[in-house]
Amino acid sequence: MIVGGFGVGKTTMVRSVSEIRPLSTEETMTQAGAGIDDVGAVRGKTSTTVAFDFGRISLNDQLVLYLFGAPGQARFWFLWDGLFAGTLGAVVLVDTRRLDDSWYAIDRLEHHGMPFIVARNNFEPPVHSLEQVRDALSLSDEVPLIDCDARRRDSSKSVLIALVNHLYALSAAQETTS
Image 1 (cartoon, rainbow, N blue to C red):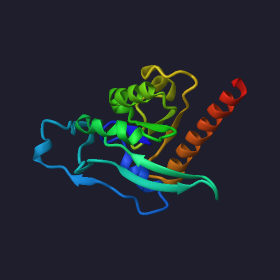
Image 2: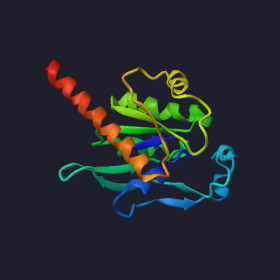
Image 3: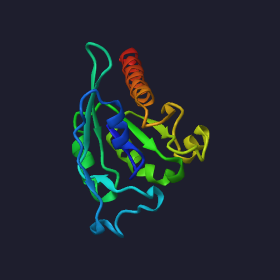
Image 4: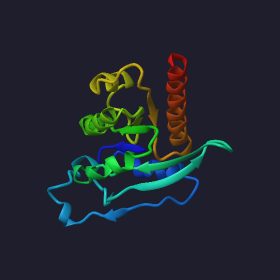
């Protein structure tokens, strides 16, 4: 699952890394969203995800990740809980110019007890360092925080590998305590 605020790059990440042609519910933004969707920080954005994006990537012969990119606007958040069903982990994609947009995603993941990592998407030069992002989002040291450029396949793939490694480490730690 890839979650985050409006316009942080979730659709871009799914498109850049999917080995299949992604399913996208990207629609043209219209006047109906004026005053509802805050496009001030994402000038030039002309389309938005209205349900979810879906892609797939094989990490090896036996491990396949199904990718779901959730819509970022508050009016579509009701879809998130359904998308979380069966999800093993998530990536919270953040834009350092709009860190406040990340709170809902982190809150929902913590509410569901879902493991996650945070990826700072560097569409623009970062406004805040990784440590400043960790502090601003009150992330524990156990939550991996990494850099990425969602437009680049290799970078998006590294994010997903970091998520899988995090899930594996959590699983191994749970086995040793059981």
